[in-house]
Structure formats: structure tokens, C-alpha cells
Length: 123
Image (cartoon, rainbow, N blue to C red; front, side):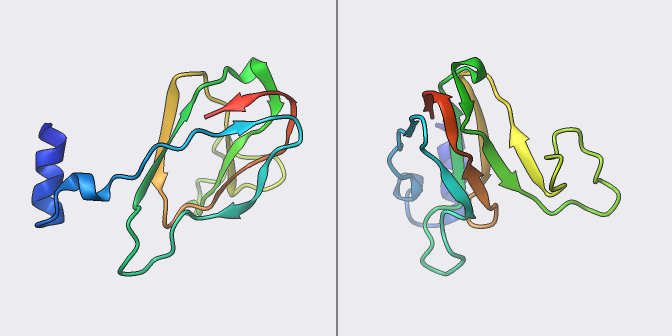
């Protein structure tokens, strides 16, 4: 409740619940993917989504592939981050346990899910 009050103060007259969208359940079976880097909203005055949260519901050992990746621009000198993809040092692959989450700027953070090759990935 306190977070909503703080958000209401910073967002203006509309109640913060006006900025919340419904949760979306995603299930990736073998062969499923969202392989193109994309952003969830375009930058414009009417964009309603600024933050996205992905809650990981499957343990990494329950599926192969199906990696959640974000494309980042790192400051100069930060290229040695250990989680960077071997082929592209601007791609971060998240290996997260079930019941963990990532929050990111939906309008400015390109992200994707690689092809699931075994099992079921749920978020």
C-alpha cells in the first residue's frame, strides 16, 4: 500500500492501479520461442507499460533452451561481466531458479526467449 501511495504521488492524478496490466502466463513447450529481440512498448506519450516483471516458475533443470535473454549496452570497460553470452557480449542470458523474478524497463530493454529444446518452461 505504501508503494502505491508513493507511486500515486509521482504519477499524478490517476490512481496507480490504472497503470497496472493483467498478469500474463507463458508456457513454452518444445520448439516454442520468442527469438526476436523486442521491447514491450514503443516510446510515446500513450505508452502505458514502463516496467515488466518476469517471474520464473520452472526450475532450470526442467527444460533445455528457453533462455530469457536481454540485450544491454554496457559502459565502456564492463565487457567482462561473467553472464554475457560467449558470442555476443551485449546479450545477458539469465539462469534463474523457480520463484525468482527480473524487473526491467519494458520500453527500452530488448529481450527474447530462445527456442525450448526439451521440457516445459513456465513464466
